[in-house]
Image (cartoon, rainbow over all chains, first blue to last red; front, top):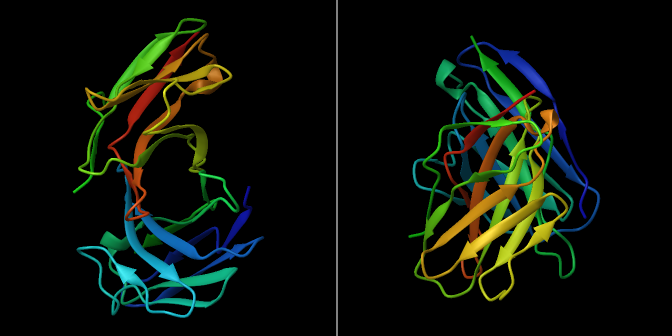
Length: 115
Length: 114
């Protein structure tokens, strides 16, 4: 299994500002995934972050709005830039299980409210 | 492109009864995995059960079982002996081996009545 922590757990931000969310995993993983869950909605994949390379963004998400860093195999950050109320969501990071595990684990999420 | 569909926005079940949550999927890949997650009001995503596309037997994990019908492209979750603590959102998801991305359905909100 993998234990994932995220910081902050929640935040209230003003529009136009930026917030950086941290994701720490207790084991080395190749791929880390960032998801967004808007209120009352399902999870949508924002991007996939591999260590040592640029993140791969899904349709509808761009690097200028959601820059991602992946400095090592256990850590990643997602920044939500120039925030608007529409960015109010839960942001979750996720990793595959280690070894032969097929499971995919999620962090506890960061609840972001933009006013 | 892969797609997951959950057609039941909300479901009610009486405590101690069984309930089936529907999930259909679409993919052109032969190798993929199907997942079910539970999301209580706290927001955490709790992994429940997994079914690989080549698994011949339906997956089971305690009170959870996955009714996998490959030809129909369905992967329904069956919860036996429902408990009040089962009240939550349930998400079906699929990951193609090729792409590696986990894609989610719209979710089903399950309410267990005492």
